[in-house]
Image (spheres, rainbow, N blue to C red):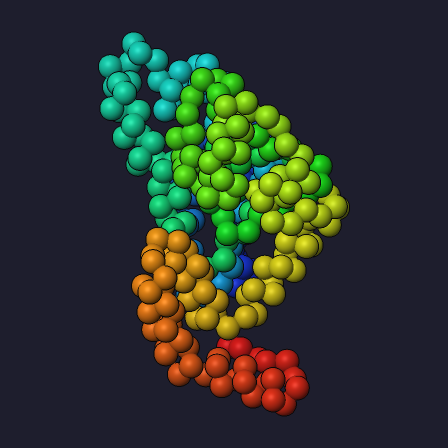
Length: 268
């Protein structure tokens, strides 16, 4: 059984973490397949929206604690000559840290469908996505400190941007477990829905985005993220360049005509 499933239907790619017996804790195989899937998504224009979810009872428990205890993968024992600090750093850079870097290159909407537990790196994988839709019974935690490690996959980058420095530090330092509603109130989760509605709600949301004008959708994502690194003048200059392009596209003409004619637009 493969540790990660990948499929495309109706222009929507679904990445499913598939180690249900381990609450979808990461394996080296899963990370490798995740990287390959993201590269395909980035390069395939037929894919318009991405859903990331977990199989079984949880979204993702993060790192595999049993592998840590056994000294496997990234956590090789000190007796292994290759298991130096530099080797572990390079392992992170070449494997799990490739995921946020690839997601940064993808200008299509990426939606995390979260249920069960999202712990440590599992939570951070959801934070890397653009939208987080959580089942009401979901529990989340930045649990790294429980095993005396740091958030090596980007959590220290993403979480403060969502909730502020002080609240992020509190969650990292205490590993406090939050309910889905508490996470939504803090700004970590975008939507909370009843457990039995999660699959359909997420699919409907993805389908709606897949039917929007795609160049405009992707330009908006680029503008929102890049403007976080720009001053106002640069951001306005950037968005005016986007406006100059999109107003020459057929989607713009179709959208305007549909509004004037009081009908639903049909985008290619």
